[in-house]
Amino acid sequence: MSNEKQTIHDFDINIIYEYFSGTDRQGPGNTEETLKALNFIKGLTEKSKIADIGCGTGGQTMTLGQNTQCEIVGIDVWQDFITRLNQNSITLNLQDRVKGIVGNMENLPFQESELDLIWSEGSIYNIGFERGLNEWRKFLKIGGYVAVTENTWFSEERPNEIQEFWRKAYSQIDTIPNKVAQMQKAGYLPIATYMLPETIWTDYYTNQAMNIDAFMKKHKGNKTAEEFASSQRYEAELYNKYKAYYGYMFYIGKRIK
Ligand code: SAH
Image (tube, rainbow, N blue to C red):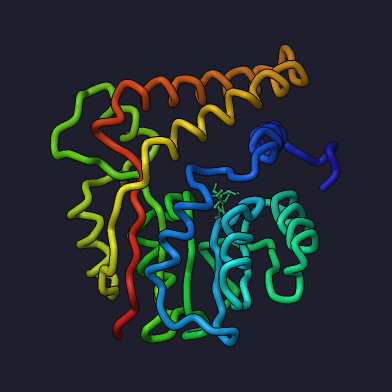
């Protein structure tokens, strides 16, 4: 797509994506936590196939590639992220079995029962937790696993400021028992549910803060860039203030029927 043909909206999106491509991970997560979750997945062999949905530049995709023998397909809507993923795969000599393709999680390019594992860190919110689990299940073999991370309320009651912020930003944020019930209703046996450490989010915001200076210098005077950077700062402040009330959880389930 040429620049001339882009709408203001496309331009805004470009700036936001550029901001995120400066980091190895575009969501809250790290290698240690990816490996911990992978430990729950049994029976993977060199014949198994994994899809990493909303993979970004593929930080966690490479971890999966280095720690299994499986074929892995990373899927993301953003071409630049996929290009980076495929470069990283070559650098790590994983290119024969770890690849990224551009695609949409609302319309995945897989056959029914093709996959042994669906992975999705910091991404399922784009389609919604419940809808994603329901729609993706058919691509898994019976006995296959789904492993996703999702922002979650830690308690039934929340201060108004944070309740309102997330109601607007992601209205499907819900409590742990409700998320587990949604997973079970979608046809999975809930295998593990656990909280990611606080540092997953504080590190994410710290890495971003390091990016912000260079990013703002480059886009000085650009309203979108300024508004975006300040919205990120606000989100980080809110997390600091209200982290007792919400955070990221891993939800791992097994397709049993
Ligand atoms: N899993 C990565 C990236 C998380 S950020 C990590 O943990 O670092 C969320 C990602 O979802 C972004 O890369 C974004 O481009 C992607 N995304 C958003 N909507 C999508 C859609 N409809 N289909 C596929 N990917 C999508």
